[in-house]
Image (cartoon, rainbow, N blue to C red):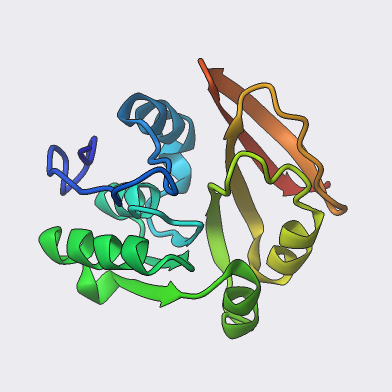
Length: 179
């Protein structure tokens, strides 16, 4: 895997070994960030279920100010930290080894412009996750969910789907607050 563009464009990053983590493919990341172009510079990013950290590291490379990476898996967190060091982004990141519920509690009072969610594909009822994210999302913030392309995803109010794309097996849906 590699960072597609920005200050770290072309740099290689690692992914956790095994089948527990499903890294976002380079072509999916490239298309996703083409859709996000103007939203990334100066943003604060939250990357839940971060895995390798590829999404948040790509955002930082493209001008995001700061990113918090969250994963409960120890091996994934070790890979994230190595990738952050390799890209020299230690001063612009914070890594939390905990599940999404604990992270939402710990991050109370902070706000994020972009939230990347890449949960296990079988996790399609995301009402509880979105409810926990609501107070963390900046007023004009977006939640970007990676999921199985044909999955029927359930979220809660006040969120609505604003954009959906798919590339083969992988789908990405953008959510924002209604109105």
